[in-house]
Length: 259
Image 1 (cartoon, one colour):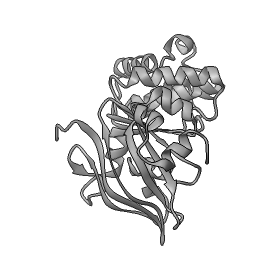
Image 2 (cartoon, helix red, strand yellow; image 1 turned 90 degrees about the vertical axis):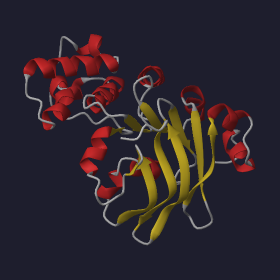
Image 3 (cartoon, helix red, strand yellow; image 1 turned 135 degrees about the vertical axis):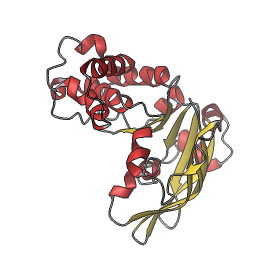
Image 4 (tube, one colour; image 1 turned 45 degrees about the vertical axis):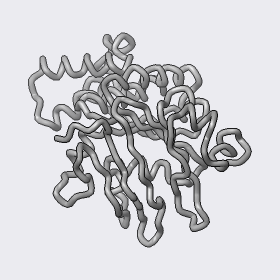
């Protein structure tokens, strides 16, 4: 186990779907216990890049990755690395809340059970702790046997966050976690991200400039090049990206002149 201060490091990462190169030559460092936002126009490869961080793209036929993605000094795309273990340690929360059609308790206990935890008292502890961390415990503690699908959209998304952290990942990837939510639920998730970053490294994809400016410490701006491939234009501290970007294309995007 390396002890570097980064959580993930991409080195010349290229992502292909068949012959098509969807993401070109991305190099960036995701720092531990920080929130990194990926922004840019639709189709610029933000979600593709995010999904490469925990090998979700492996599930897409014809997808392949060239270059290196380091996690604790190990290339996640090395043939010796188990993709399932990668996804345990680098969790994912999707755009649309996707609770399992099971009771709230079983949604959160699912991952720990897969890992072989069977003892009820231990599962009870994990479920309560995860729901507390996801700021949902007080709202659901009396209805743990009810289906997760009965919750509101914002609650469902927090349930998905609780489910993701129940297996104690080190990194949490969030693909537009608020795009299906109303402003109040969105604010709750943003506050939650700030609370969670004490224990986790978070990478989010967002279309919402204000959200990136509000919650993230670092921002990566991507756009599509003339070969229709996504490339990283600029990566820096969020404040700099939004107030004093180095590249005029970044400035045009964050000020709303294009995109």
